[in-house]
Length: 96
Image 1 (cartoon, rainbow, N blue to C red):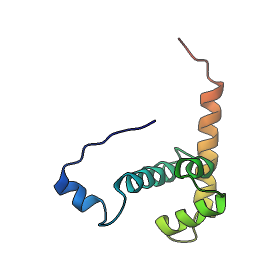
Image 2 (cartoon, rainbow, N blue to C red):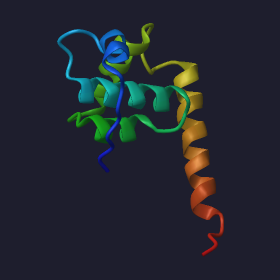
Image 3 (cartoon, rainbow, N blue to C red):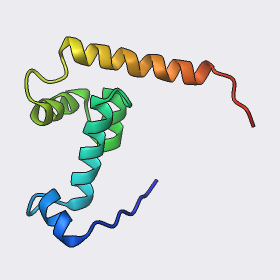
């Protein structure tokens, strides 16, 4: 899916660091937000950002979220929550 977002220049200048690819920056920002809020898993983030390995994702998260990266109790709970949400969505009957 391709999404176009219009952000006023004066806001974009404050939001996106100078020299950054704005599309990539916003993609990474949305990926980190979704991961942090248990909306996506590490594997989904890997696909979303085009990383070759889960280790790249973990290093990316460690750089963005600080601390010890994703290998924490919180990250395991986040992964379990995301998995349970996906399983519930897959098992619930769909109406047309």
